[in-house]
Each structure stands twice: as structure tokens, then as C-alpha cells.
Length: 244
Ligand SMILES: NC(=O)c1ccc[n+]([C@@H]2O[C@H](COP(=O)([O-])OP(=O)(O)OC[C@H]3O[C@@H](n4cnc5c(N)ncnc54)[C@H](O)[C@@H]3O)[C@@H](O)[C@H]2O)c1
Image (cartoon, rainbow, N blue to C red; front, side, top):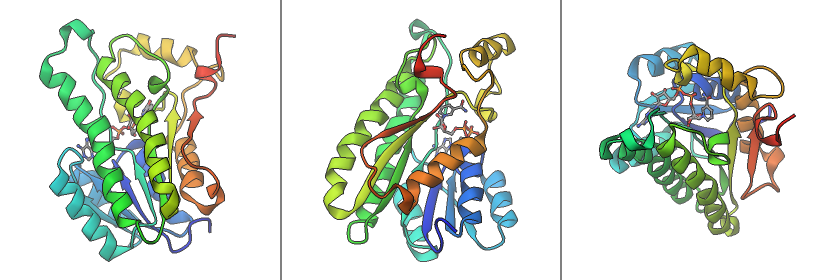
């Protein structure tokens, strides 16, 4: 058991990478709060995990919602680790973006990560803990039609470093992980030809699975990563290694 009796929060924990991470953490002994907007998926995962996880409906774009979720998590399991994973996509050329399109992505993918990390650092101030922010390969490289997403994910990478510096004295580790393209509902609306092209950009010749990202999140959240802070772990099948 790699996180036995630890209390964990996974934002965006009802679907895709987040749900796989919730299941992996529970399998390794943790109690987990599933913090997500999606009521039906969240409750169904809670039922599946039979008392080891609790769904708390949460909107990371609202401070009152995030802070209320942390209060519930403190009561249910305590807060030893947080996977700051909720996120959305938006595909359009930059010239077609409305202000609302831009702000919505930044509000969830960057401001939401800050809000959750701030609450986590307050909760962990006397006990220490581990925060893992979900960035992306698209925080490291640009990609057409993803202006807000790439800006937000680039912001997450550098925010992580600053929070790691601020948290170090209190024993709070802060890292990010950067998935390549992963087969989850986030990719459902992509044009199939584009998806085939994106798949071909991974030297390993396939998309990643949610479980492969969950394995990395588990490692960074666990004490096995006790000397790792302020860094980013790329889990991308070689996407960012270069061209072969
Ligand atoms: N799938 C990929 O290819 C990929 C690649 C790199 C990074 N990521 C990142 O991984 C994370 C998870 O993505 P996924 O692929 O599992 O997507 P997903 O759509 O399967 O899951 C995202 C979850 O976030 C929740 N969510 C959305 N807005 C929210 C809000 N305001 N408050 C709380 N929860 C909210 C959704 O309800 C959903 O359950 C995201 O941060 C995403 O940017 C995904």
C-alpha cells in the first residue's frame, strides 16, 4: 500500500485521468474526495468505491465552492495530497476566440489550479503534503487552435515552481505532470483525422491511457517522491523528445 491511510483530493475526479487516479489511490490505501462538477459520474464512482471515496460537487472556477470542498475533505479524510486535475479544452483559431471562450479556459485551467493549490497549502500548513498540478505537453510546446489551453498550461508549469518554493519550508511538495494525448472524453470532439495525426506524433505510436497518468500521479503524491519538488514529470510517450 503506497498511500495507506492518506487523505487525498482529486479535482476533475469523476472522469478520465482523474477517475483513474481516484481508483488507483483507493487501491493503494487512500481515502479520496472526488471533487468534480459532474454529479452523476461523481456519485457513481463514489458508489463503486464503497466508502473509500466521497463525491463532493465542486466548481474550481469558484472560490466558495473550492473552500467548501476542502472543509468536507478535512472532515472525511484529512488532506495529505491533492491532484489538481480538473480541466477543459477549447479548439479554435485565436482570431475566432470570443473573450468568453478565452476567459472560461483560463478560469478553469489556470485560475482553478491556483485556487485549489492555495486552499491545499492552507490546509497542509502544519502537516505538510503533496500537490500535483496537471499541466500538459501543451504547456511545453504550442499547437494551433489551442491558444487559451496552451497559455493556461504554460502558466501551470511556472506557477508550480513558485508554489514549490513557498511550500518547501512547511514540508509541502508541489509538482506538475504533463501528459501527452490520453484517450479520455476530453478528446471525444476532436476530428478523427486530427486525432490520427496527433497519435502519430507520439514516438511510441499510440495514445496514452488514463491509468498510465494515474501511475505517475500516485508516485508524485506518495512519499516515494519525498525529495521531488518544483519539477514537471512528462508522461508523453516521447512526444516532446524531438523528431525521429
Ligand atoms: N486527455 C488528454 O489528452 C490530456 C492531455 C494532457 C493534459 N490533460 C489534462 O488532464 C486533465 C484531465 O483531463 P481528462 O482528459 O481526464 O478530461 P475529462 O474531460 O475526462 O475529465 C475532466 C473532468 O474535469 C471536470 N471539470 C471540468 N470543469 C470543472 C470545474 N469547473 N470544476 C470541477 N471539475 C471540472 C469534468 O466534469 C470532468 O470530470 C485536464 O487538466 C486536462 O487538461 C489531458
